[in-house]
Image 1 (cartoon, rainbow, N blue to C red):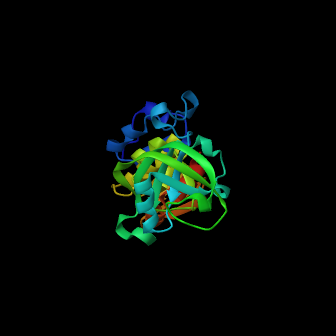
Image 2: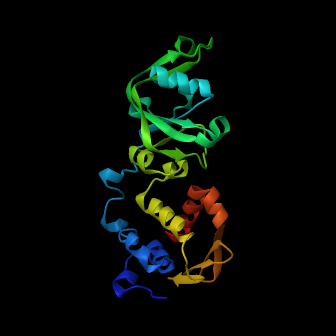
Image 3: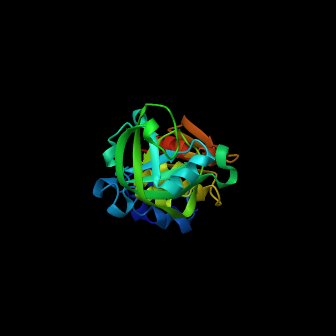
Length: 248
């Protein structure tokens, strides 16, 4: 197996060096900037990971989805919002597998036209006698994403992401990534799982061994962590995040 040219192995960043050695040559070009965080911003405007102004809104039932779409609105208890509701620019509707089965995921999103705090009883589209305070978002119009963001690894009843991640992610797991480098590592591991690879590779004391469809990480002979391919498939964000932490 070739380790690539000298310029490749001299690049800074353990993530770059370890994963470069794992990948077949056809994938190595994908790593050009993975280890260069010291010399460039974490993300560009086109791939912004910091402006988390998209609210992923949960649905209580199928009836709510129809009401939200017809009335161009979304509502949520004010107590659930941890950051300033005025920062929210977009609402995307999450359809759980429990309620929607095979069509679960995120399909609809819309730009926020206005918002206001109201009593739950004031929301006439879906009547309730509750006087709890809600935030009522008026949506300009609901739009369909070009592809459904598949439902996977949902960690809480409410979360926020960026417009870039909303429009480019294949599954909801990707919506949680907060850096371009970690997101790239996820994509590379995803491809690696489906590619021929050596049984073991090492760089700067870190060894990644692939055995029985399992990633095994050690440093200077000491076990760090392991993750099966099944772990990665079922919990892609959590698995990638853990591996990335050891490689930083």
